[in-house]
Image (cartoon, rainbow, N blue to C red; front, side):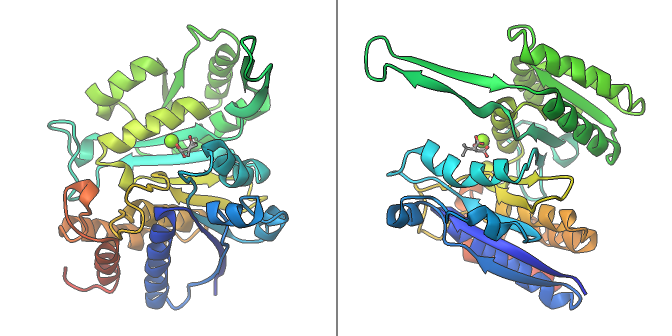
Length: 358
Ligand code: IPM
Ligand code: MG
């Protein structure tokens, strides 16, 4: 009887609201599948913890998390604490400390959701962006000297390693193999960036030789924005660097209906450490405390968590319930043009899980 130990880190702003909603939905799912149980432990880390303790997470935080089966994360960010402090102190500390190098960002137009692209419906946009999540432009390498003086210099170095690039390419090819279209697009900027990006392209071509059954293409990141807007059905799985995928995944979320819906999985595919699942929307302090945050991104992230745990059936059940709730019109929060609250969306998904008519 699988019992999964989940570490919940609600974090800041609407992160806390959507994680609470996600845990409710997981409890409703477990209630109808007696063989499935979740043991949740919540950690109060984030910006309030920082104000009280001078750090974003406990000093032994990683040691305390490492034996969980998965981490369910809300968001970090605070108007009073610099973003680089909140980010490096918690979210990136976990991603880097646990080598969560593969970041998965699915984008799809869910039922009842309208894409801002005219004439583009559910079948026309079904992507998974694979984001390199451990190095590249987010490596944190660099420094500042002569701070505040006219001579001030700042260096921000992107780092690409053969090991890091090869493993994300293999991960993306393996993923492409599980999808009907069997197509992988490599995003690059090797025309302007002639070191790391040229190696990136080369390793993509090398790894591609081991996957003759996968169709491939290569697109410059600027041209990619145009292609996503003008020809969405020409894309399937996309692999991109940390920064490129960060930007493209926001565009993907917007094109598929909104940032409030978009989920993400930060994976350690070797399972040496727990993987982390979170909505991509962030702390949203402009709407925090109002009870109107869209919890669908957090719910869909729970689906990715279930898939990673090997609970494919439970994952499909939850995704089906999210789709039914959205299709019914009862789960449309203000960001989607509706007036549903977080609690009402949660209720609708729980009702769908219980097989009720919506
Ligand atoms: C994301 C977010 C983060 C990122 C921010 C909060 C630093 O935008 O997960 O896409 O850039 O990685
Ligand atoms: Mg982002």
